View 1 (cartoon, rainbow, N blue to C red):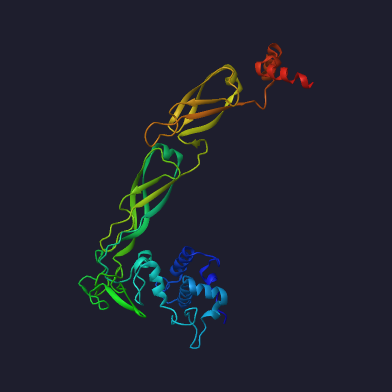
View 2: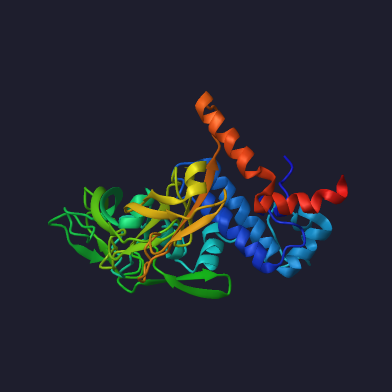
Length: 386
């Protein structure tokens, strides 16, 4: 069966630089790592393949040979496996986990990836004493414009990792104790041979603590945390807008082995309003008025988010005129308030009684509609087109 192209396995172009190769390998290695896919033979095989591809392409000489001869560059009498491009040295691949740990800085060997991989996916039932802070959490909350204007208290509910009540976070079954790690004999590190070079790495069994839990907690399986639904009252201040973030310190996921809890970030979205549009801290709305009010002037009650307000309409107000109601807009998070802008649209009656029509016809006759200021100005300019 033909071997897969190394560049295709990593999902990079042939001209990818070292940083692009490393980034692509990190992504693939996390995706197919055996610790994340227990019992999945296909994932384990893919993990080996992407590790093999990265080992070749990260080495300038091996990569040059591969680019020139393909997989034939590494064929040898005793079987397949990358060797030096000149045919000597090498002796095949390292353990794929070694390559993974070279990238992620964790422990080697077959006992688990450790290091950053453990931080990303959670440790097993080992006895690490080194504390690890809990993850921050995000909660998306939608509120109305009225709630954003006035502020509110709201109860939210979400699931998160909390300290295990059975073992109080230490990962050990009650009555169990910690014993000296059998792998590193309490040193926290192991020595591994890579040909003529010997490496010292963090112990994969105890994670560097030198101790191992004798019996893992039955409730949390040694992690020290369990998932739980949590309810929390949050206070949302007046003036927030879509995208505003509220931080609730210590209400994220619980830490491990004495690490601090993460924070909870509440990200707000303010729903669109049927009447008001928001522009910063100003509010905008359109209100219809009768043509008699626009002509004669008077007062009009208009709605605001905080009740009704009186708006004075001067005589002769034209359709589309915008009025400003001071400090009737959204409150500012740091004090002050925006304004409410009211644009009036003059309504023309669609049907008239015979009496109304007679009155308007008489008005048109005695006033001369074409003598109105705006109309007169327009027709004066339009004369040259007739």
